[in-house]
Image (tube, rainbow, N blue to C red; front, side, top):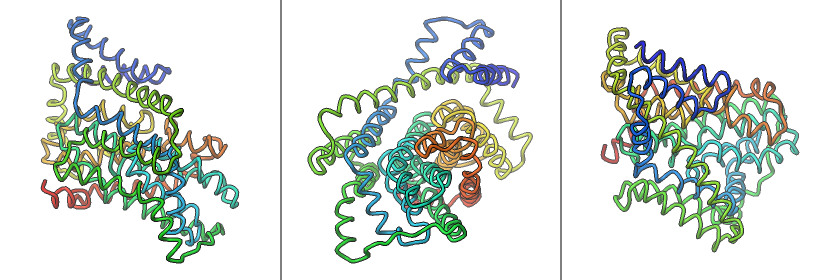
Length: 428
């Protein structure tokens, strides 16, 4: 346990003084290797390379590319139109549209930041023009972005599956119900807030022809999650191959069906997907070095034994882990936190007989809530930047939405069937 305290103490100290996360990890890892008299450059390189050299990790750039193709190809605008017909007529119409569009876009991007950016750039200006308070509009979009990596596909779940050796398809299935519950909870909150503040609903043509038109326009995007999850469960392809299929499908849809994706835009989109993937894989490599150190020191097993001695029930263990992850999410982005803490926590939950698929979903929900918690909530910064709202003001506006998402987290934590029903139904 002393080694664990030294390792994470050095990591958080480096973060506190402003060192980027990958270098904070590296400093902590190299310091521990030096202290263990195991500082060998060849060992460091080998462990970093083996961490990134993973077939499931190849899914990440392709899902990123698929999301970029869909957004640039005009799909986010079509999803907004479709969502407007479905829920725009409810009090607070555009805020409901934002959550509904986030649910649909979640089936494409797998990223909270991509969801927030795509939906926010369209809907925040629309909401402010309709006299919604800017901080409310930004909070709604940021809160909806949390759903992005919970409903499949999900980049954090891919990371967890690769680290914990679990089925990515089963993790994807486990995220569907929690994501929908979160969307419903946010929409209920929005309804009451809209009634209290007098936010308008939209005048929507609810005729069959309008519904048919908007459904047809958005159908290309709506089918994509079915292709991804259905293909994985049907054995047509692995999660990594599903990401390639998704990217090709999104390219064809944006380029040849909607014709809003241009050849000129492709190099920049591919470059950005490569850069984002590179940042993740560098962290994965350094985190694998951390994992090697933890295994050498037998820290995960020692931590699991400590939990068994200290806590007598799964309920207490999950409560402590939830609290710890919510705290971590305030300071570290979700993907990095998943890479760092999953290898430490998986042995703990296995000791208590907690289902690793269930825990993977719980961990993902936990860390995605961190995208809207200050001071490092990326979705807060993005939504606040679009709405031109200071972080302090937005941090107050986000509180009711945080409470709803925390309540959903508690619900799925202590009613595991909400997570495990679909994975079991489809063969877990």
